[in-house]
Structure formats: structure tokens, C-alpha cells
Image 1 (cartoon, one colour):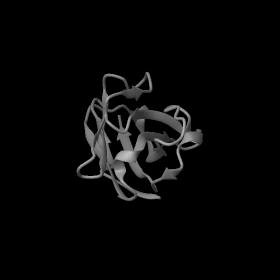
Image 2 (tube, one colour; image 1 turned 30 degrees about the horizontal axis):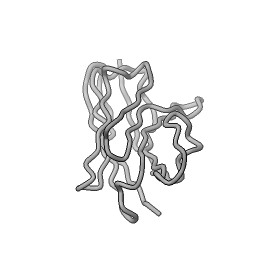
Image 3 (cartoon, rainbow, N blue to C red; image 1 turned 90 degrees about the vertical axis):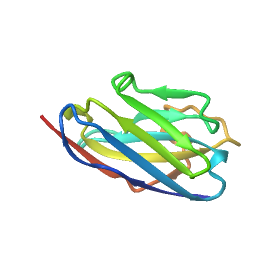
Image 4 (tube, rainbow, N blue to C red; image 1 turned 135 degrees about the horizontal axis):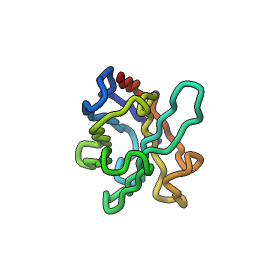
Length: 126
């Protein structure tokens, strides 16, 4: 098992930047592919970004590509999401999630992630 705790959310203005962190504990962090998801009020949770266990490959929601960057530091057991040029439409509760490398993984599909954090709120005002 792995436990995930997100941090770094906050209230910002459009155009600002934030960096979210997800601290992992428990089983070896490098045995998980990781993802960031978000859920806005009244909407379904959606995929934002994903990264393989080795950080060799990343995946992004089209609307955040070029503005958001997912990264990880396996030595620090931490996942990151750098968010630049934030827009009001980015307002949501952001979750990190872990998918074991022992199972097939489709980064966009939340069903493939076995472990989730509690989320960190990002609010972007216009």
C-alpha cells in the first residue's frame, strides 16, 4: 500500500502559478505510475496529468498541455504538478493517485488507480 498526501493548493488570480506536491509513504514510490486528477463542483472527476514510474513518459489533458508540468522525485517520494497561466476553469479539488506497475495502466482512466489522496483545493479568480 501507499499513502498519499497532497499540498500546495490555494487561492490565486488568473495568470498566476502554483506547484502542487503529493507526498507518498508506505510501499516504494518508484513501483507506481502516478497521476493527477481534478474535480470541479458539479462535474465529474477528470484526468489532468500522468507520469510513468521512471518519469520517462508524461501525459496531459489537452487543455492543460503547455501550461502544466508533471514531475516526480523518487528519492523524495514526491509527485509534483507545476501549474502556470492558471485560468478560472482550472478551479477544482486536485487529487494525486497511484497505480501499481504490476497492473496494466491507462493513465487517463481513474479506474486504474488503486490509491488516492484526499485532495488539495485550487481556486482561480478572474
